[in-house]
Image (cartoon, rainbow, N blue to C red; front, side):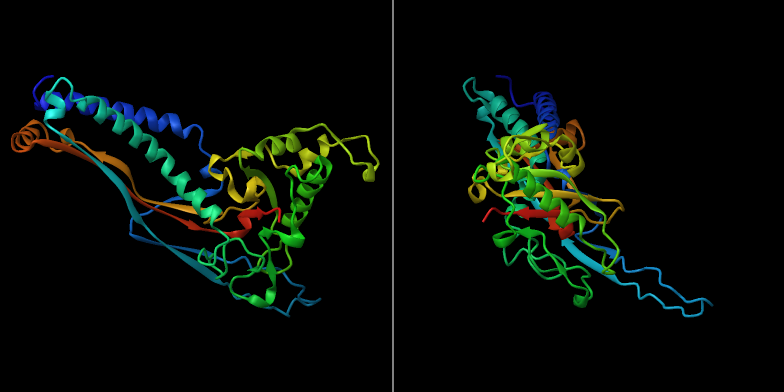
Length: 344
């Protein structure tokens, strides 16, 4: 192997950059996390997101129009604090200069794996937040767990009432093999109705939500695909038997193609699924928020000022090391953007 010279390091790091970018782009093709997450860039360690609560509404002012009522516009905010994630690789000079050292392979393989990790990191965090969203410590901005049966319709006024984004127990809507296909489809219809009935914080106007996707485990995915793509579904004898034409119904429900989430494999016996919603008006928050304070990057020697700097480093060291890091954080957003459907 050649000596550890600046030119050798430059060529090595050129390969490392190439494989890292290739792996990053390859993995991003199959990710789902941005379907339920709002991505925001930040210029500070702590990001405070503020939005106006939709409480304004018209009222009858009488024949003469003099009975004017004034709105109190309410503002809510939630805070996210970025954290650092990273890793490093350290290789000794001998691993490059000896024929059996494998230093080049170790360096390029590490760069490739880190490229994949850069792409996958947001999804890994989002999946963890979703799976643990029912925990007592996983609080939404209204002070209850993100998946809860007692979210405030108006986070500033408990008197307006509550809504659920957790369906379980008596509200369970299973779609797994424990129920027949026609019952499972009826349960998706129930979810649609519950979501569509949610109101704005003013307590009267509809929020105009509708399902847009189903997140489910690989085990539940085939059943979800069957339900959302079927033209005919066999009915149980209690429903009259025979086959029912369900194509129009499925189209109207609007669930779209289900999303297979490997991260949910084995989660809650592979029977729980999550419904992502969309609303007519935009919002500062999604179901979850990914604050990107500092995108992931790898620090290379040949990016530190040119040949003289590399010469000096190589002259005084018997090992090379590379660091990769980024600053970001995932947090909970609007509870009405994701609904958890637990079979029992």
